[in-house]
Length: 132
Image (tube, one colour):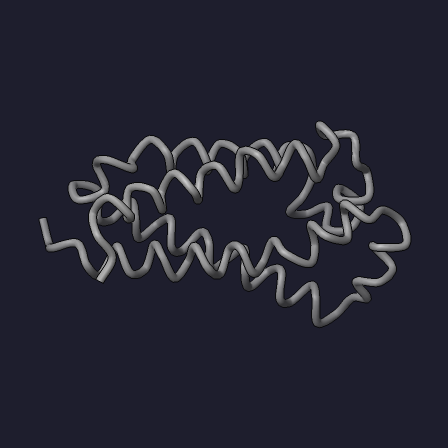
């Protein structure tokens, strides 16, 4: 069982992962390799929206008990990103991305794993939260 304090920290960690990773790996939105590798998901608009999701996670860190269904939406959003990543990984050669740009390669190596981990976290919080 995860304590309430650690659950709150989990929301903050999820948010910070989105908010800090995007500008770093995208080189402040100038890394065209990230955009071109998966343009339907990782356009600069898509990257900004990932940061907005991060802000939403942080915003509910102390109020998650009263926002059960929003936490469920967070879990759904994370599993969608994880599925899209896995589908891309199975159909593409990650080494090509690394050859074009190391930061983009690292980004495409970890983003789905990160999303799956936070999917598990949000799912746990969703089922732990009583009906309202």
